[in-house]
Length: 213
Picture 1 (cartoon, rainbow, N blue to C red):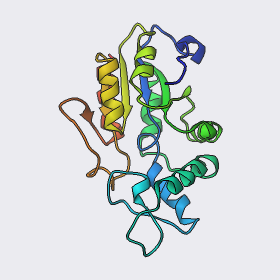
Picture 2: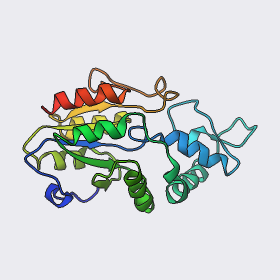
Picture 3: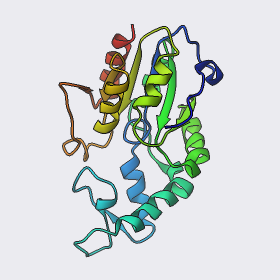
């Protein structure tokens, strides 16, 4: 878990509600951007399952790339290619409007070497909110942040394990699942009995606003 910062050090008002939001497949089309990056290296990203390294192939081959080799390309994407990622439709406007009633923190599990590129991408795309890099389950850090504000909090992520982690560490935090890439939506594991699933940012914004009102 990342070292927990103080919300006031992030420029946030602890008297306001808090929205904690992921980047990849929530604010940005990560899989699409990663696939385009792999194509420049002569590789294919096939959306065959809700997975990352198991979807990377050499053209014409039926067995995916070795996991460690895929991980090297993943790290390089954050160093050199993540700035080209497309913003999820409606995400910037939704956060702008939510920021009128709440503090917004971006919590991502991007590798450390990608911090600068990620911050620049956020700034260029109207998503210039405090950025925190995490490792592993997000529940402990989300809980530590939520405890520092007097108002309610909401958490948005695409991955079920992160949502479950927040449910365990901070059960009072409202949880929303969002998957930006239409190709991934039918493949993404969901648990609507535990976490609200909304893949449209306009509708998601309204649901988040209601949860922190």
